[in-house]
Image (cartoon, rainbow, N blue to C red; front, side):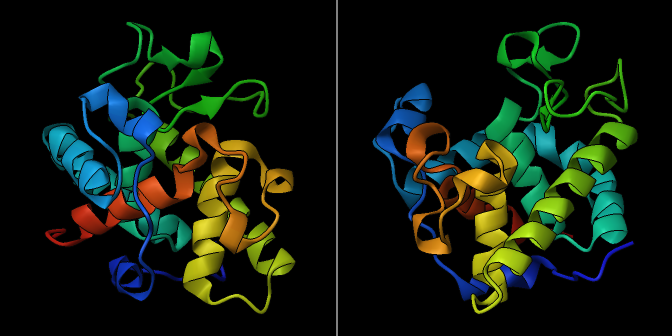
Length: 191
């Protein structure tokens, strides 16, 4: 499907700043890389049973499976904060990776918020963000294009002015840096 091909080793090529104090507050943490790692660890029990699904979506899209798990951790605490119908964001988004109904009129995988169809759809959306950021920032290193794509997954491609300012308008002003560090945590023991 894709011309992109990343695996979990990409996390060794860039160091994010981690979660902002605003994001970390949900777990009574101060912020930074340690907070991102702690939140990822809290979600590990929900991520681990879904590794095969993240691996399948990664094979489909060329994205690192640990990154997909990290998106699920950030978006919904891998399902822990969804309503009984699998919705979040005031009913505007569905599933563990929070596909937004306002941007995507067809939502795959309903009613199972952890379904392979949902994870695949969200992963294809992320892959589209990677392509958009690679086209917008062709001189940026691939890991920085991927980091910018994370921001675009959250705020839309138009909200990303550059990889260095990727989180200027993301939720918590830290989305790409937090997800990156959660992904690094998951990648350390991904098998």
